[in-house]
Image (cartoon, rainbow, N blue to C red; front, side, top):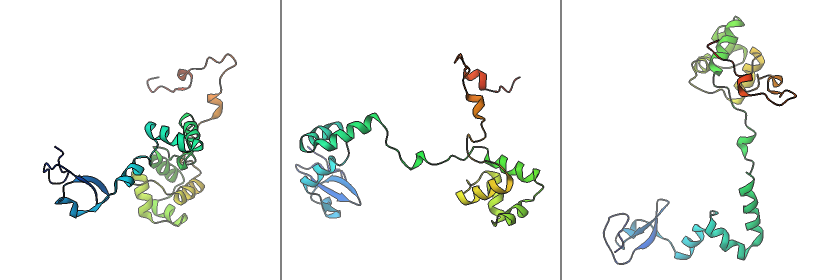
Amino acid sequence: MPQCEMCGAEKASLTTTKVEGAELELCSDCSDFGTEVRTESSSSASTKYSTSSSSSSSSSSGGGSSSSSSSSSSQRRRDMFDDMETVTGDYDDLIREARESAGLSQEELASDINEKASVIRKLERGDILPSDGVQQKLEKKLGISLIEGEDVDDADWESSSSGSMTLGDVVKRNDE
C-alpha cells in the first residue's frame, strides 16, 4: 500500500501535489497543503529534460530535435565559462610582492587605483577574489598578470622535432 510522503500514512490512493516547488505523493488530508498536479503535466515535466527514454519518444514526433541532441552528446556545447579567465591560485602573494617591490603601502596602492585599503588587505590575505575591474587596475598599476597560465612561456611547451618531450622536461623539481 502506498505511503504519503508528508505524514507517512498508508492510503489506498495518493494524489500528486506540488508543495513549495516539490511534487509529492500525498494523501487527501495532506494534499490541502499544496496544489494538485494534473497527470498530463507531470508526464510532460518528465520529458522536459533529455533522457534516453524521452529522446526515443521525441524522435517519432520531431526528428529535428533528436538529431540536435545526438550531436550535442558527441560535442560539448560552449558556455559562458569557456570564455572566462581563471585567477591564479597565488594571486594574494603576487599582489603583495608586486606592491612591496614598487615600494607602496596598502593605502597608497588603494588610493592609486581608486579602491578602499580594506579591499587590498582582503586581497593580500586571500579572503576575496578580485573583481574584473580591480583585477585590471592591479595588473596595470603593478605590471603583473593575475590570470592563470598567462605567465607561462609558450616556447617551453613546444615539442622538439623528434616529438619526444615529456612532462619531466617541463617540470621544475623542488629537491634539485
